[in-house]
Length: 252
Ligand code: PXP
Image (tube, rainbow, N blue to C red):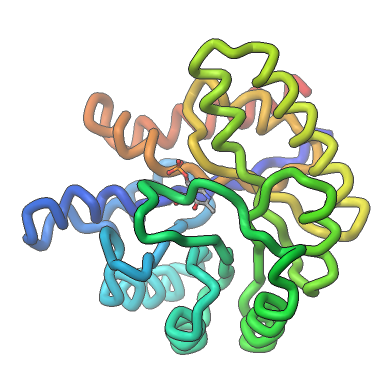
């Protein structure tokens, strides 16, 4: 299968750098434009409950700017009433529901959709009714994938963090085992009618095996790209990631 994989660039960590000084720069919306011009298909931003990087004003700006340009905003958010209200106000193209714990450095695991069906399903319904395409960020666990399908969500985003960590640490056997589970999860999800996205921890070295999974339609990548931008600029970092995704898909 050689269908093009969409690239969503997560610009949270542009806001992390800005917030370290409490000033107005660097502006995540400017980064979003550079990323789109360099080959990104959409922009992803996580409005965390503690507002440690992206702010409410950033979401308002991004939503308006991307709507004007006809490009998709993927809002990542916790499954809380406060976040639901914000999402319903801005009606982004896509909403990715993620688990959130204040003490974590990043989104460390997937949502427990199997255990949280009664809490999560109404969020999926309300967001879908408002016109957003809802995605659930989960591990490649058949139990969670089947549960995600029962919520009525259109999309699952498979958590690639453990795969990327294992691959970077040289744990080849473990990485290969997790990749096998990601492939099986993608196949199962697609067989249930879910669109398959993947993300977390992806860099130049780990992107190819994930992009080569035939069912994967979209990758969301942030931290590595913002880091790489220090050395080569954001446009070049995004363009290089785009090239690697396309090459992996052609080669699969
Ligand atoms: N997808 C989801 C659901 C995430 O929570 C994140 C991190 O905010 C990403 C993708 C991007 O991960 P990274 O910044 O490690 O590339």
